[in-house]
Length: 113
Length: 113
Image (tube, rainbow over the protein chains, first blue to last red):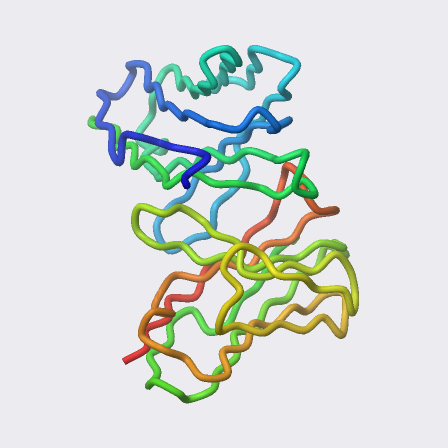
């Protein structure tokens, strides 16, 4: 069973506009939610995280929103830049499984010039 | 420069021929892990190690072995590779299990024919 789902395999956004990437989860025992970014031929790199006790965390152009009642996480990128074109992975940390990280399948973001 | 180094980057092998993928980190991290990435499935953990001589199974350990004789190295061993182990493999390290900021290697693309 997939505990973390990224339902959009890809997303295309115009440069300068807002990119919104979504992630849904099923387990209430997650205490941290993370976004990683991956360029081709490279490993994922940490982007931003949010604790389950918060509903928003901001870092420059990147903002992560957490809606616990809906079990939904989103990443907003404003404004989108060509260098943001990458695959974005949502990941969560399970409190009840020795803090194991559970990963979504990823969303490929394409920023059009 | 802080990094996780995997070798080789690309490998094509035949069924049953033992192989080792090396992983080394220079950040003195205690926790290291191996993941495989398959289309539509995200990252799945194969094995992890909390410290020297301490290893444990992740979600998909069948067909793999690991060892942690030194803190910096965590090789992945496929004793008898099969075609279903064709995948993209990533080594990662962090200060502790469940550390929200994990550092990943560049990946090893393995093809078993």
